[in-house]
Image (cartoon, rainbow, N blue to C red; front, top):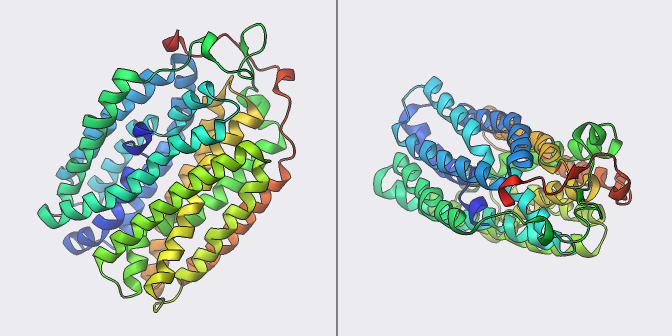
Length: 403
């Protein structure tokens, strides 16, 4: 949970919304150009996610996640030295994507799924609470740092979170289970870890249903999150109120993590995810216009955050349930690609609409439909498969580091 809190998944997404305005004023770059930094970061990180997932399968989560966390903290802090050129700005985001993706749920979720089976949804939800805690704390820290020393100070201040909190705790206590500690259902009687290979998974319709559903919901959500501070200010509220709304979004993410995780353990997960993804569609409706009252904006932020809580649970939980743990990192890594790529493209699209029209209404209307369709696609996944019949298995624990 601490690794996720302080990793490359939530920190950039919660800092850039508050730094975007001051950077626009200092450099004169438009909002689409500023958002493109996150686009570059997301696309490169997504392309690297299968690599990090495969390394976690082969070497274990501990070395991959902790090294990535360390290097991510150094590079994120180096944003203090951001040059005044778009080329340099984009290069820094690209480097962050290359080194940081191993500090995200791409790696941490494999360890959780190896430790837990019967209550895996809740366990993954608790792990993913890290993004909620980051969403509640990081905007406030960033806002204070920007007030104290400008937008540059926010980056090294927040880089202390992975370097001084998550990394020491991870080095002291984090590990994967030994074979005898694994819960039933992870391995068969001979000690083989159950699950499909990436090639086997990609041959089935379930893999591609998940792929498309994740892409649609991610595109709908990510831009709204990155531009939330600007959306709030379009409604006439100040930067401090925008930071408060970002905190409410984080509360929505927290609620989504726990509620959806608990329900996933007790009911058919796609049947839970579909109505959960209809809530942010209503949020997009509430956030349209320019004269919405603050209580309705807060409700919109809360429901939008619920989408992020659902979305990440969907990827981690359904990957384990439908494809097993033998090659979980590889499969999760590939399914993370639409999440990362479309989350990266979305902020630029939101920014382009804002630059062209002066508001976010058009893209929010599109996102309403994307949430609904993305959720409905999950209903086509069918019942959970019997993974004991799969051919793609590994001998023993796939993590030498845990032995």
